[in-house]
Image (cartoon, rainbow, N blue to C red):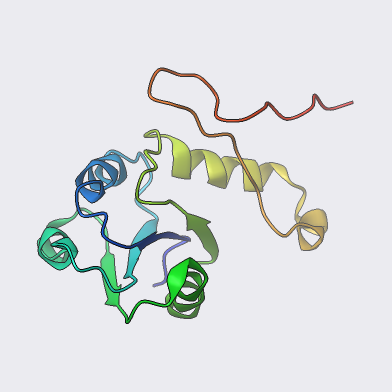
Length: 142
């Protein structure tokens, strides 16, 4: 059975950040996801950091290593390899809150089924660890 979400992380020489993201993925309330990591030719210890997660994580972790193609190339690889119904990007320096995946599913469910074909995605704000929102808030609904 395919997961509902593919959580995609493109990475290049970010082995030092991936454990924090892994901990955030382990803390997710929903387990209806796979974590797809595309290593875009890292020369650090990214493979050694990721390897234990492939068998020990509480959810499917897939690791694809490729020759460096830049972030767009990593995204193309990720899209081609994704198994989920939804594709969510979590960069290596992101830290999703425990309810993030559950909340995406809830937001999607709030859209009437007959209108979903009009949507290409759902987006949310991100925030710094101290709670400050990154960027500007969305305009209020009218």
